[in-house]
Amino acid sequence: MSRIGKSILALLTWTISRVLMAVLWSRRETFIDNDVRYYYWQLVHHGMGDGLVEYPTPVAVLLQLIRPASGDTELGFRIAFVLVMGLLDGAVAVWLWTGHSRVAATYWSVFTFLIGALIWFRIDLLPAVAVLAGLVWLNRRPIASGVAIALGAATKFWPAMLIIPMLGTGSTARKRTIGFLVAGGTLGLASLLFFGWDRSTSPLTWQSDRGLQIESIVATVPMLRHAFGQPDLYRTELSSHNAWEIYGPQVDFWLRVADVAMLGSVVLALLLGWLIALNGFGLPGRRSFGTADDGGQLPRTHAIVLAQLAIICAFIIANKTFSPQYVIWLGGPLTVLIALPLPGKDRTAARWLAGTGLAIALLTHLVFPLNYSGLIAADSTLGDTLLLVGRNLLMVVFTVVTTVAAIRAAMAIGRPQPAVSAT
Image (cartoon, rainbow, N blue to C red; front, side, top):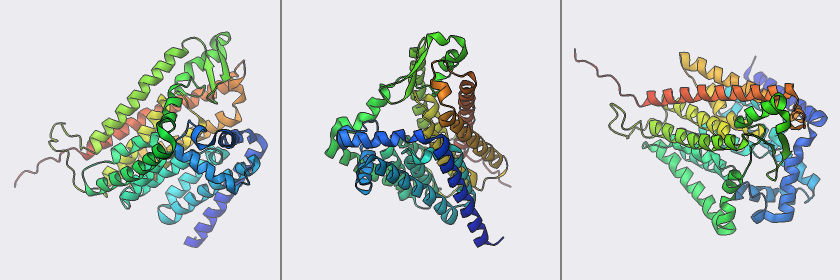
């Protein structure tokens, strides 16, 4: 088949997949637009300064810009929001196909298809695309790469941790750092000047005050006990944080576990940053944290991509909340990883990770929205709970494997080369 023929077939396949997503939404998933309704009414009643305090201020500004184009009605806002996300969805697929890798474009399209129409009804597509761009531009456009990560952090704070393994002393790494600091500093300063300290930091306060959301990894045991262990001791209800949370024995213990695990995710990011950005300075044989300008070397790129994937996974499993849209965050690193020209075992491992990522996306879609009612019912459905537990266990395994792979790859790039004996 000719190149044009392959492109036409890819476009047709992508279009069919999106039509199927829209059909499934219209028949079984229409309630997933509640978050978009919430965005609108928060802006109407509280404005950008006091509304949507769980999100960084640039998100509120962006959503406010959509309102005039929507006729400032709830229905118009929902339509405008979905159109923006749908256009972004399509633009990313085309960009990857024409400007990066057809393998990457195919994987991204399949991954988002398995998550379903939820990608059009949540803002999480924005940081996911920002991280994807940051990795695609990692070496070719390092300043833009740093800017992309900063923009991701401006929509959800967590991508800020992803810059850590992208730092370094080489000129390429320095450019990424400059791009991140300039863009992030500009956005942060603008937020402080126009909205003040409390509004600029409100997402952190919001997150710290949350309870145990029913889909989170740390809620797995209470959800199992709620389903068939001691169901009368537990209850699920919609909290003031707009999430279904579980209440009952040992919930406080699991919340403390989440706090410790979140600290662990930060330690992991710093560890990977030390091994990659500082070359593992201090380890045997590594007496300098200086590195050559090796941004184009495949091993370092591989290590950075794995590091970002591991950090995202660690953040997700440590979180007191595991909203289904968080899975979108995995798409960027997995898309870049599967397209890297890796040799031998690394290639096999990348395929395993990519395949497992697709399985997690599908299981998440089955959990929410398709079988969510069984989880929030007074008497949780055992089958739906086991589906959630299976997804969570797979996510934990995926995180462990990814973390081990990231540390190994990071250790390898800084390992001193054996001395060559004179002949």
